[in-house]
Image (cartoon, rainbow, N blue to C red; front, top):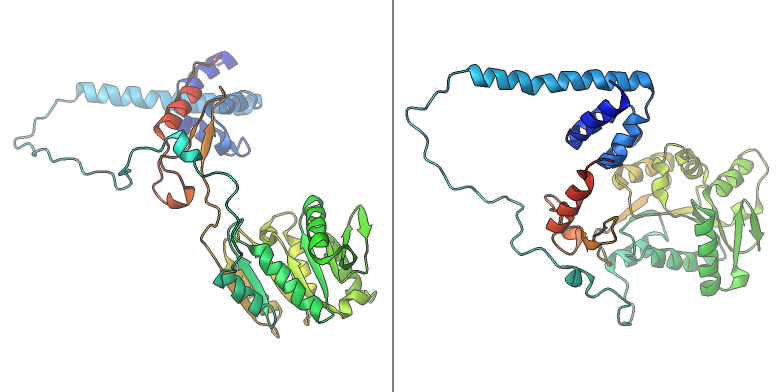
Length: 347
């Protein structure tokens, strides 16, 4: 079977079979549409395409065999046919018509200014960081930075050094500018691989790798004077602890942090925060760990689908993604565009 024959066979198949052929052969195949998936299969080495062609021959023989068996088998008519019963509605069938594009875009913009009032979970997190480690698991945009700034103020008020870490240099630079405006430029320094400003400031912004290296130096006897007064370490985007390549940096940082230092871990996507809290207690037995979980989004998510032709339609049949949970349904127009794009004749 040459590539043209293989291509024709693949085009005629539902996409689920293409994903079955791509499994173990194409990285992250589940993210590819039908056309890109076919291109990726055709780009495989010859031995793998030969194996797929063999699977295709076996797959094509199954419907024929069933069709032959069904045509030769005598049809049996039931003596007492069951009465037809009305179909039950689908449990996730929407009770209202799908939302329109204008309704989906309604309300998007800058909200009216209102006086800031901390939520209960924010107040609890700020109170807990004074005497224990704290893990804050809350959605993006819900106010984790407020907890960080309040904790920083508490530590700096008692002449303690604070280190704020992030996984990216760009994010560290952003936080450096943000905290310089909030606390004053003379109170904030930054240490990254290519930048070193005001390194003796009471509040230091750095990447997690830089902090890990500082702690490494301390264990080898080259003690950094800042560790004597280090009262608070804030690890932003702490879900990187589970990263296959960089997670060891976060793990070693947590293990090597001085016992007198409070830890504040911030994340919007920790899958097992309770297990993480228990692990922190196990490696820091003299310090308790307080878990703060908040699940309500302050800024709701709305889904849109942009078709390659430029057409913009709602992704789901209701406005907020948060309300979908299980049993969400794609918008009818999105399903039509999906089908049109995926099953368009291959050129």
